[in-house]
Image 1 (cartoon, rainbow, N blue to C red):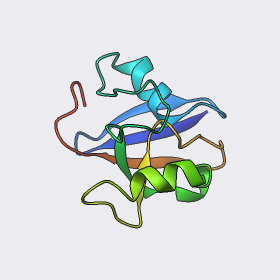
Image 2 (cartoon, rainbow, N blue to C red):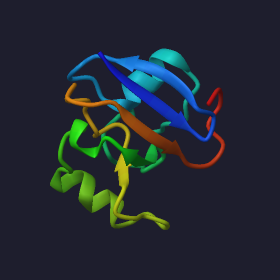
Image 3 (spheres, helix red, strand yellow):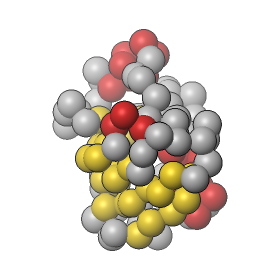
Image 4 (cartoon, rainbow, N blue to C red):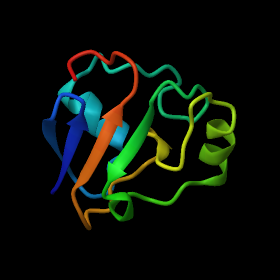
Length: 102
């Protein structure tokens, strides 16, 4: 199991290898904002992976195309619906905006 630390709250959750970060977040907070059911179409699950980027899958072309349309994207930006936990190291993410529960 991989530990995901969610900033700014500092809350930690466990995530199994192969699960998306969005799915892990939804297991702990079903109200986490997302609009397209994990299809990389809306960008509402935009997060920053602050640490543990080698513990997350690579950016796909589809994800990269959506990130190109979002304001405020940086080198640590990912869509939680597309970032899959590899299980190789713990991850620290930053939730943008005012996600419920985190």
